[in-house]
Image (cartoon, rainbow, N blue to C red; front, side, top):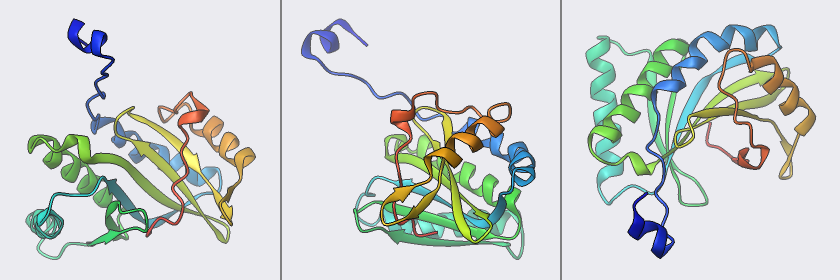
Length: 187
């Protein structure tokens, strides 16, 4: 932060850190041992994209996936939620491939100077009969669990337990005030 920024009260957002998301590739084994099963879907939540960029992004991701494999095993969908955020939803049976695709998308946004649009990557897991999520915040480069129980409620005790289980594998967000709920994700 420069002197002028300090005098005018402006703050600069940290640059997105897309590389730490790969910690999930090894943590998934620990999470499975803790009772979470990968749900086959993950989503990247973005601030609203510039006009026309929404459809262009879907086309680019499909093209990138087809370069990796003649018949990509990861499906791509673009959705807009009720709050106006854009979601790039990746689904497939290969968790590592979906994770790699999410990394490619984040890297592409950074290369194009659109890194400030990246908000979070949401990993869906199943815990028995309910959905459980792990959220990766691009700005802070940290993870936290999110377990909605319905009617805008969450299971805080189970979230804390899962964070304790995964802290050796994942960079867990230490500030609980930063554990934002992502209600109604399109995953």
